[in-house]
Every structure is written in structure tokens, then in C-alpha cells.
Amino acid sequence: MSSAEGFTDAASETKIDERKSLLHKLDSLILLLYTCLLTLTVVTIWLFKHRRIRFVHETGLAIVYGLVVGAAVRYGVTQDTKSFVEVVTKNVSGDWPRWPPDYLLLDSKDKNQSIEKTIAYSYKGEFSHSSEIDQKTTFDPEIFFNILLPPIIFHAGYSMKKQFFFRNIGSILTLAFIGTTLSTFVTAGILYGIVKILPNLEFFRFIDTLHFGALISATDPITILAVFNDVKVDVNFYALVFGESILNDAVAIVISRTVEDYESALTYGTDTSLNAMLFLKAVGDFLGIFGASFLVGSLMGCTTALLTKFTHIHRFPELESTLFVLMSYSTFLVAEVLNLTGIVAVLFCGICQAHYTYNNLSSESKHITKQFFNLLNFMAENFIFSYIGVSMFTFANHNFNIGFIVGSFFAIFIARAINVYILSFFLNLVRQNRITMNLQHMLFLSGLRGAIAFALAIRNTLSESRQMILTTTLIIVIVTVIVNGGSTMSLVTWLGIPLSSENNENDAQEEEPITSPNKDYNSLERPSETGRILPASWMARMWSKLDNRYLKPFLTHSNPTLMETLPECCLPIGKYLTSVEQLSRHPAMRAASMEQDNSTNTVTEAPKNSAGFSSLVGRSPGRKPDEPKEFENRLSSSNI
Image 1: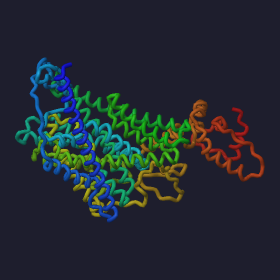
Image 2 (image 1 turned 90 degrees about the horizontal axis):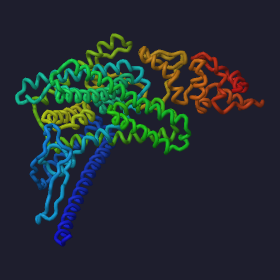
Image 3 (image 1 turned 180 degrees about the vertical axis):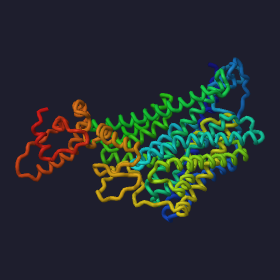
Image 4 (image 1 turned 60 degrees about the horizontal axis):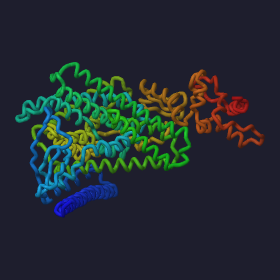
């Protein structure tokens, strides 16, 4: 190698090192910027809580601070100089520019034509004249879906007030599935009529309005729920709003993906016309993806429950908590690898973890997992809302159209009204505890848009229509969070929303309440033979029966055991699936132990494994345990 070539290589390496060092400093600056935003938000939240200021929620604060920082970055930072090289394409396939290549190969030579290299440039999207810092403040959309959204969605399922959720499951499913689908098509239909009237929107197709209708139907009433929790509104209404919102997000994500697949089939298929077969296939895809994602999430949650039930990992809380977190996040990844929807899977995994796995954890792990996901949820949510404010100014390809924005507000207003008021009318025909008109008004105003809608909108901003969708979504999110969220406290008082003495915090660790014979029951509830409150809904009653007789005894240490609830022919299976911890918690076992402690006579020690429960053979399902003395004698005389 000549000295000139060596000098050229050294100079080139120096330039590359300088460039990497500059990018590293810029990345650190951006991370510091968002860290300071979160810190400022936390301090302000503390001040507001200390002063009991409730006219704005933390998410609204995060958006406002993000808007200020975004404006400062956009207009206060000097634009940097970029270098350009014009590249002439060759060997271009017929799909260009429909399918942009993954890499561009650039043949490069030094001034002396002595060194020749081929440099690969990866695909990042449409070119933008924005500054380097503007581009750095705009993250890869996959960061939201793979890192930020999973803990938020999992926390929603894990912190769900499950006993009231399942009592209102029929209404929640109706509002989430039928309501979200109605909102999607009503929004799309109204907007399609508007874009046909407005000038310069010929590029906006019906499939684009359908995509926008799907993503904007995802509600995020965290501000509303925070106020509900502070003032302790009626627990059934709280569960209705909360349950509708978390399932609504899942349904909106699956509908959005189905619309994208439908769009691909229309665009790149042999038949580019709207037809019934493609529509039916899209409906089938929706049901299949949602059902399979639900199955993956439930299976992963149940697997974690079995691992914590039949191992002694609870003796090591750090390992137990780590296993819990890894299994939960793996649910999202497994669903994505299987080409399903990870958000739906991780939601139902969180519900299963709260309903089953939580009861098997040690007290330390219960505290660790609860606080850990509370922290992740708080930080991820506030980061996303800060980012929403920042990107309002730093996103390079905004497409503002006042007519489309106003039309979108009108469309989602009408769609939400149809969703809430019409479905509530039909639900009241079968509900014993009616959804009053004031509750319907509050439910209507709880339809804020937030993180899910933004994350869906930012995934693809290549086309002009997608850029307009993102810009409009940002404005809708900012307005609804600040205006609706800030007025919630006044609306709760003005509408006379009923309050409850019960705590609206998550009850993942709480058992179903045991009631006294003289207790008055809510019209949604009725007492069972055991004194537990059971819902009046037939769907919820059937689920409660299946859950208490088979699923909980199988997946947790709860009683009665499977040896009592399974048919007599399945006794060996019941024995095998009954843990030692379950035996020690059995009421008859405890009573016998107490009698043994109080007795002065020597009592034969009971066996320490599930075989000692063989005396339960032949007991009919639902029969109460034998008296302690008889139960003790059966254990002592067992020869299995």
C-alpha cells in the first residue's frame, strides 16, 4: 500500500470517527432531553397532588411540556448542513418504486481513483430536509410497538379490577367488539363523504378512511380513570369504562391490521375492485388473528401459573419475579413471531397472570411485580405523551388540512355517540342495573384518544394520506387529552355520577368478597350457596362456575381441589394436579390441625402429599368438606 493510500484511509477513518462521535453526543442529548421532560412531569405531578389541583392530568402535562420542547427544537436550533450525492438507478425491477430496495449500493473512489469501495445505504423512508436533531427526536415506530406499548397493555390487564370486570363482561364485550366496529365504519363512512366534497383530497381512498376509522377508534381514558379512582365512582361503572377501553384497544389494533392486509390484497392482487370475497376473508382474518392472539396470551399466562404452582421457585423471589416478567414479555414476542397481534396476546396474558399466577407468587414477588409494572406503565405512558407533544413540531412530513381535521372531529363525535347511546339502549333491555343517561354521557365523554391511536398512525407515514392521518391523529389526541381530561372532575360533579365506598385500585391480590346472609346485593349481583357474590349475567355465572370448579384448582393453590370437583373416574388426574400447598390450605386440613394442637391426645400425623387426600374420592362436586374429625380419620386410614 502506498503512503498516499494509507493517508487517505487514515483521513477517512478520522472523519468516520468524528461523525460517530457527533451522532453519539446527539443521541445522548436527545435521551437527556426526554429524561428532563419526564423529571419535570414527575415534579409537577407531585406539586399538583400536594396542592390538590385536579384540572389537568399528568398526561396532559406531559403533552404540554412536549409541545414547548418541540417548538424550541424546531425553531430554536440552527439547521445543520447535510452532504448529498445524487445516485442514478440501474437494474431497476418493475416493482420500483412500489417496493423500495432495502439497500442502495454506492461505488465510491478517492480523488486519485486509487481506492474503490462499495458503500451500502439502508432504507429509512422518504427524504426530509429537516435538521439532524429533528430527525433524532423522531424515533423508529417499532420502538413504540416492541418496547413501550407492551408494558402499558400488560399493566392494564394485570391491574384490572377483575371481579367487577367479569360481572359486567357482557356489556364490556358488546361495547368493545360491536362498538369499536361500529365506530370504525361510521367514522370511515362520514369521512369518505367529507373527502369527496373537499377539494384537493382526491388521493384519499375509502380504504384510507377505513384505516383511520380503525386506529382513531382506540380510546385511552387513563385521565378519566385517574379522576374516577380519586373520587371513587361506582365500581361497576369504573369497571365498564376500564374494561371497554382495554378491549377496545385490542379490537382496534386487530381491525387496523386487518384493514392493512385488505389494502394489500386490493393493491397488489389480481382483482383491484372491492368484492365480497375479499371482505369476508378480511372478517375471517380478524376473527382468526384475535382468537389466536387471545389463545397465545392465555396459554402463556396459564403456563406461568403452572410453573409457579408446581415448583418451589417462590423460595427465591428474585428468580420468581424475573421468570414472571420474562414469560409476560415473551408472550408479546411469541405472538409477533406467529404473525399474530402481540398487543392482544399480552393483554390477555396480563389478565391471566392477575387472575391465576398472582395467587401463586410469594409475598415479595407480589409486591415486586406490582410495583415494577406500575413503574413501567407510568414511565412509558408519560414518555409517549411527551413524545406526542415533541413530534407535533419535529415530525418532518406533517400534512395539515383544516377541512379534514374538522371533519374528523365531527366523525368521531358521531361515531362515539352511536357506539355509546345506541348500544346502551339495547344493553338496558337485558341489564338489571341500567346504564342511566348521565352514565351514558360520562361514558361518551370518556372516549379520549391516546397512545394506541398515535402508535398505529406513526407506523407508516410514506403516503400523503398516511401523513395526513398522523397529523390529524396528533391533534385529536392533544385536544381530547387536555380538554376532556381537564374537565372530568367538573363533569363527574355536574352529571351526578354515583360514588362508591369501595376502593377502585387494582384488586389482583384480592379474593372475592364473602358476604353475610343479611347483606343487600347490587342488582347486578346475587349470592351463591357459599356466600360469594355472583353476577346476574348468565355468561358471567357460567364463567364463574367453570373458573371456581376447574380452572382455579388446576392453576392455583385454591380450594376446593380437583379431587373434589372432577368426576370420580378422573381422581388420579386430580391427585396429580393437586399441590401440597393446596392440601395445607384445605379448610378440613386446617380444622384438623387446630384440633390436633388443642387436643391432649396423640393424633396420627396426616400424610404430607396429595395421596393423603384419597379420602375425598366419591364426593360429589360442590359438596362441602367433611367435618374435621371425619376428615382426619379418612386421612389416617388411607392406604394410597
